[in-house]
Structures are given as structure tokens and as C-alpha cells.
Image (cartoon, rainbow over all chains, first blue to last red; front, side, top):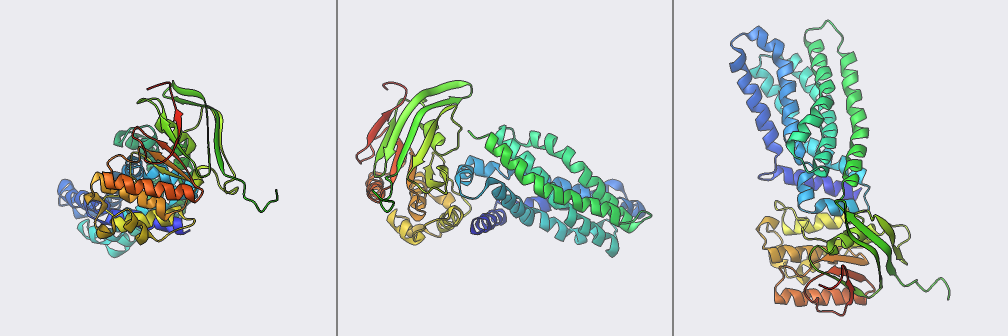
Length: 222
Length: 208
């Protein structure tokens, strides 16, 4: 446990320091959401109807933006070799790295959502619903994205491969995330059903992600 | 004898074959090292010195043959008992010298020595709060050496360990290796330059 705690602490520390990348995601999120009202025009009703989708799309792209570097930096400086050799199972180390990434890059997106909701003419209930679905759904994005990040290291291809591999996996999360938000705001469907599926997607990816990523890293040793 | 006498630790490879990118780097390689012994792996560029170290470290899968450590900790695999010092230093530029070292000490676990003392030994005690990004190549190497001292592991796998070290640094490192061997550790080092300690030579791929 000390080993995993040390790994999480280190990754968060690096992410929060200058050039670390934790703020890049939030800034990107902010940019997308701030520009959207200008693109859509001054139709407030339309804006609040699109609001949840815009927030979800922004959060999804922002969380993918920094994810391809999850293993790349450790691979480039040789840390990954030592992590692979260590007494900590690689699956747990992968899970710890993903958790650290979510804490440093995913959580700030959720914290920023209430502020950005104002820009999209969303009321308190709507913003709360979006923030809640993001809280339940972004772990799924991080943990499925981790598989792509591990493959990017293994196959020596960067961002392009990541986008091609990970985007299809994140589509169900996006669908149910937005569906749950819309259900909470306008109805008529119940909030519970899509939200439960969203939670299920997160839980499944929490289990599958670390194993798939570790298998990919082990297979690609060189 | 009885069980109280520890078995002398021995690292042995039998018929080790390495294939990388579809090309056979070396095949049928036999080698061994016993506790307190250093093996210098020599050979021309591209003969597979680094590959051999990575095979021992479990970072490559051998295409044939076996590598076993006898007399080590039975609960642990060979890589878990090794320190690997490669070309890349496994340091994070954003973290300070002390943070880098304490992270590896906590992450690698096991028997530990005082990190501050290790830093003093390698001559970095004046720079503990400096971000590792500001270190010179030689200082980065020294910091990597401090990792070997802080976390005790019986087998050291060193890839060109004296690269970037100045003369004083090489002397210091020679002393560290002698101490490690005297404690019953073993060293496998890929090198072109003499290490400054007595070594058994293991030549790969014919004469240089």
C-alpha cells in the first residue's frame, strides 16, 4: 500500500507543478464551453437545451487530451522499467496511475462545471445533475483511456492511435452521461436508469482497464 | 551441512537466446555469477549487452534458455531482487532530488537505508531541494546511484554505469561497488571502460 500511495502522490505532485498538465484539461474545458454560446447564438432556450451535451463533450475531450501521456512520460525516462520490475503488481500500479490522473485532471473538471453551467444558462438543478453524472462517468473515461495510453507506449504511436482506439470506448459513456443529465432536467424518462448504466460502465472499466493496460505493457516490453 | 548455513547466492544463465525485432542478437549464452562477484559484460556495439541485462531484469522475454537466481529470497522473483540502472535515469525533472529518491525508496520497498546519507555518499547533499531537471548528466547519474544505496537489493544490473561520471565520481562508484560485493551482493555490468574493480569478463558476440 505504501508503494501505491507513493505512486499516486508522485503523479499528482508532478501534474500540479508547472508544466504538469493538470490545468491544461480545465483550460481546454473552459475554452470549449466559453466559445460555445458565441457559436450557437443568443438563443437562451436552445443553449440550455444543449448545455448538458456541451459540458459532457467538453469534459470528454478535456480528459482525453492529457491521457495519452499517462504512460509515455514514464516510458521515456525509464521509470516504467522500474515499475514493471517492482514488487507491486503492474495491474495495481496501472490502477494507481489512473486514479492519480483522475484526481489531478478529472476532478477539477467536475469542480469547474457549476461555474461553466452559468455560461450555458443552466439552473442549479441542471448543473448539479451534470456535475453528478460527470462524477460518475469520468472514471470510466480515464480507465478506458488508460488502455489506449498503454497501447500507445507499446506500439510507439502517440495521439492518433489513442483517438482511434479510445473514442469508440467512450461513446457509451457520453450517451448515458448526457441521457441521465437530460432526464434530470427535462424528463420524461427517469434519471435512475441511465445513471445506473453510467455507474456500471465506470465500475466495469475500473476492473477491466488496469488488467488490459498491464497486459498491453507486459506484452510490449522491449 | 545444515540449514543454518545460507546457500551461496548464484545467478546462472543457461543457453540464453535473445531475439529482437526478428533478428537473433545472441544465442546459447551461458553465464554465471556468485555472491561477491562482479561480471563485466563486454562486446562491440549492438552485440546485445543491454539486451542481456534487460533479460535478467525481466524486461525482455528470452527466446530460449533460462536465467535463475539460486539462494536468493525464495518468495521473490529475480527482477524483484534486482536493481536496474539503465541509460535512462528514471528521474522526474519536476520533482526535487530528495523527492525523486524518496519516491523510489517508498515504491520499491524492502530493506532501506537513510536517503539523506545516500545522497551525502554520492555527493548530492548540497542539492536535495533542487528540481532534478536542473541537474547535470553526471549529477543525474549520481542520484540514480543513490537509489541503489537507499534500497538494498542483492543484484545490481548496471548499463554503462560510469557514463557521465567524472574521475572522482568513478572512484566513489568503485568504492560503492566494492562495498556492495563485500556485503555479498553481485554485479552484472555492461561496460566499455574498466570499472575499477576486479571483474570476471563475459564476452558476447566474438572479439570486439
